[in-house]
Image 1 (cartoon, rainbow, N blue to C red):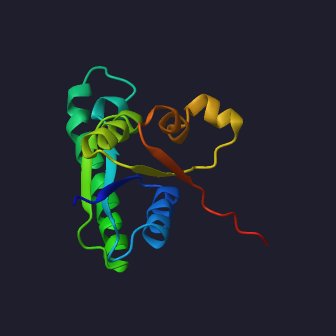
Image 2: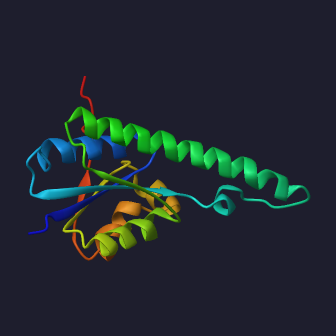
Length: 155
């Protein structure tokens, strides 16, 4: 019998790594009935550069190299977090594209039962301007969506 799949979306934020750690602590154990798939959406180089002018073609390889390094850092940290919790069979993917689309496709491709993402905790104005990936996923993913919020430290 095939295990159910949990997809966890990660980016470079502490919120996404907290969501991964939360998932490993609460949902996935060494003998878990779930298979873990960790997905990082690498932005296309064209979206990372808001201008293209004379000499723009020279900038693209530099930006692409930086995006690849960032993806390696993110997936390396995700792998390290999994190994710390003795989860050595996690599938870690880097997919180029917008996080919203990449995570929806990951859910469909892996027939996921649960999608877990962190919440950046933006206020209403920032969320309206930047858009909320977690809000989009909660409305469009064809599985249960867990939005993990990092607790605020109270003094």
